[in-house]
Length: 78
Image 1 (spheres, rainbow, N blue to C red):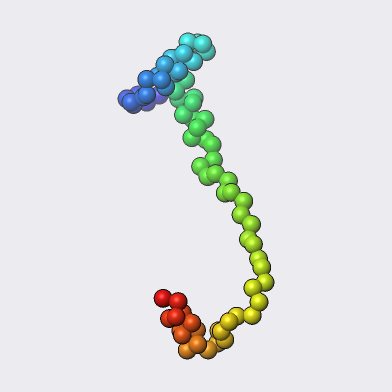
Image 2 (image 1 turned 180 degrees about the horizontal axis):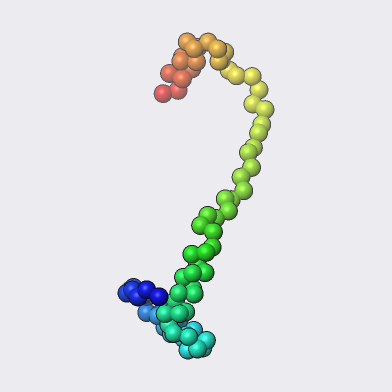
């Protein structure tokens, strides 16, 4: 097994030591198991559900095929 050095939050270090003592394993073994489990989980989260809302807005107020009329309407809004 490879050796490395990592900086851990003191609370994480305490928990790793506590679990190691409880399970009769070294802190390194516990850390490896926890990391392996975390890295095996899917990386993507389920996207929140999204529902399109649709309403009838009636006829357009301008002929959308008439580019000049559309420009006039858009210019009046700015």
